[in-house]
Image 1 (cartoon, helix red, strand yellow):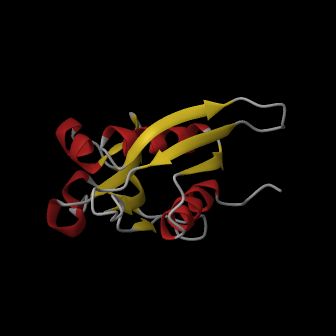
Image 2: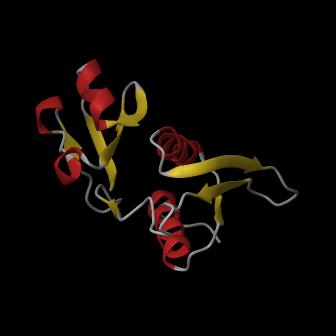
Length: 133
């Protein structure tokens, strides 16, 4: 069944898998979801990232979740900021620091999907998709 917001669906599946202590989670793949998952992998929130090309109509993206030695979650929280019903665009000066620099903001810019720190460095603003901490 198609969803109206694949990014919110992705974040919800990851959040539910973390709360249920699952080792991995499979999500429907799209270009934006692949880019967000790649950022989570680069930043160390996800241990592994694999693409499962099956016979179904849509490919799946399999994320292996990262847990710390004391079995705490690497991801404490995920929040969707810009929604289909209420878009949130930010300039470079308005890109938020998540949890005082301990988390990341993920933006969709004219240069692609990137973290808030990289967008500040490239001096570009865009749509604030989500925050992760």
